[in-house]
Length: 117
Length: 111
Image (cartoon, rainbow over all chains, first blue to last red):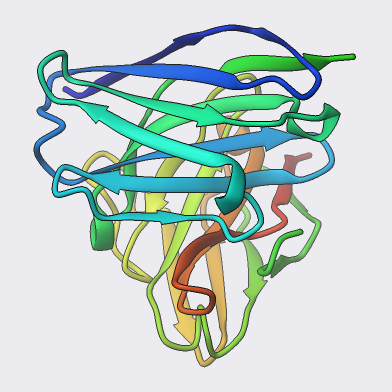
């Protein structure tokens, strides 16, 4: 059974960089793709981007200029960096496995990240 | 903002059937598969339907999905109290180098 766990800084200052890591167990990140999704009260579920082990990536057009995702194959983890954050980036951030046509089938519990002024 | 528009709410009594809709466009639902996710209170979303109408292992056959043109729908038959929560549709969108889009969500209430 695949399990994912988000970790990282929960309180980020305005204009700084949000950094999160997702630890994966029960599956190798050398398979499928790995994605970040966030949820806020005003925007609902918002897809941030996906990255597979070949390095192929796709990002939400509205976030592309500020997002960087990476894989750590040796530790079976993947990461998210979101630069120049504002209050609008306050949300619960989920990491998940993207099985492409089979859907996003395994999710972490989510981590609430708050941007402070 | 969400590209896929869903009916905001649906409700029914235990045992009834509820349906909810998801409206998109030719760049997403019209050409790609539709997915449905269930989010129960205080939990992460869970994949309910993939490839328009397929259920992952463990999802009861009370849940069924369909797609027609640029719209999709999810039906929940034999409604149960534990079905109360939010339901989101999603699809790949081919515009702007490709990206995944979610619906606005439907809140299901069991009366």
